[in-house]
Structure formats: C-alpha cells, structure tokens
Length: 321
Image (cartoon, rainbow, N blue to C red; front, side, top):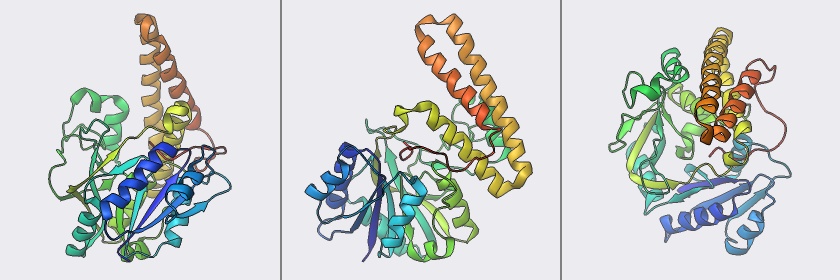
C-alpha cells in the first residue's frame, strides 16, 4: 500500500465529511488506506463516517486524548509506505496525494513533505517556518515582526517573505498536512505525546532533521486548510495551550536556561499585548470587546508561564486550527 491517510477529528463533522470526500477524489481510482481517529466527538461525526464512508477504518476514543496521542494511535494501525497526517478541516485538491507520493519516490533522502496550503478564499496560507531561536522569538514577542512586514531578518519564525512557489527545503512544515516516509518514521519515532496540542509539528521536524532526513515543501500539490474550527470556541484556552507548548519545546531542545529565556521573553510580549489592549479599550470604545478578550488571553498566558505543568492539561480541546 502506497499511502495511509490518518485524520484526527473532534466535533468537526462538516469539515470531516468534506475532507474524506476530497481524499478519495484526490487518489482515485486507487483508494488509500484511510484511518479516522475520533477524539470523543459528540456532534455525530463517527456516525457520519460509518454511514457515508464505510470503507474508512474508524477508531473511536473514549475521551479526547489530544492531537499527538490520537495521531500516534492511527500511525500504529497504518500499513502504507507513506503516512499522510491530515487535519479534519483540510480539503485536498486535484491529484495532491499522488503528486506527493511521486515526489517522495523520486527523492529518497526526503523524510517529510508538505503541499502548498490555501485559505478558504484560495489565497496563500503560509505553511513554512524556521526553527524557533532567541532572535526570531524576540522579534515576535516585541511586535517587530508585525511592524517590519515580510522581511527575512525580522519576520520571526514565519516565512512570510517566501512566496511558496518553488520546491525547497524548510525547517518546519506546519502540521495541518504532512506526508512522511515510513523509514523516516521508524528512525525519528512518533509524535511526542507530551505535546497535547501545538508545537508537536516543530518538535517532529527538528527530530527529522536531526536524524538526517530532509523536509521539503512541494507547491505542485495543493490543499485548502479552513483552520480555526476548534480554537474559536475557546480562544483563551487555545492561547494558553500554544504558550505552554512553546515553553515545553524550549525546555526539551534548549534546556532549563532556554525555558527561562522564553518565560522572560514571552512574559514581556504578553505584558505588551495586555497594555496595548488596555489602551485600546480607552481609545476605541467600539473595539472594547475585542480588546478585553486580548487582555484575558495575555493575563492567562502570563499565569501559565509560572505553572508547574506545561504539558497536558485537563479537559478537552480539539486539533489546532
């Protein structure tokens, strides 16, 4: 079997149905192995899969296990030479899967490849990143990345200066749609389950490069990522999870001093966001509701910086949007 497609789903019935339909359209006439790992959805998603896509292997979790754990469950059940991890809010376009498989067949040193990602309105969605480092995280926390525009020196981790129009190696591919070689997976290992949500993609990509496998961006394959489907339900919670994940990443790859640097840097950045939002409530009454939300997110992230556990929280969250 060429490719196993693994989709983690949590209360995303409408997007999941579109995603599954696009998987089969993209790979006709030879259907891939498709595995849906349902993270205890309550919106009828599992029933929809069973009714409309009986050929899909559906694995139902009794509780929301998080993004990394659920993907690893699917990976362990898969048999393809390549493993495609696809978010439930992704719509695959054209012969995307076949294109990525063919690319991997032609480039045996590539361990991970990703397609060109588009927004719902078909504009470009940046999906290539650089590894976090003290300088680019400082640019992001200070607001310099936003002020400078798409400049390579000041743009933070985001490669907004890259037009996403050519094949090239990248540090990180955003984890909404990956295709990984089975041999690379065996060497790199599965997703780190200590990352409940967010940063597991950055961690996996770093481990891939460390194991001497290349990561490539392939614009000839395309997909739409609607994104934001889960995070809009609880923006403060998701902001905190992203904050915690970044601290865990720095602790894992840069030690205690690295994490301490990020606690100080992120604290500085969140304080600036809080003050900016506070001033906005005084100046722009019409935007007071949005400003208060920004203040809540900033204060919650500041509190999370000093929490003892920066790994898996209690409760349920979905896949990153």
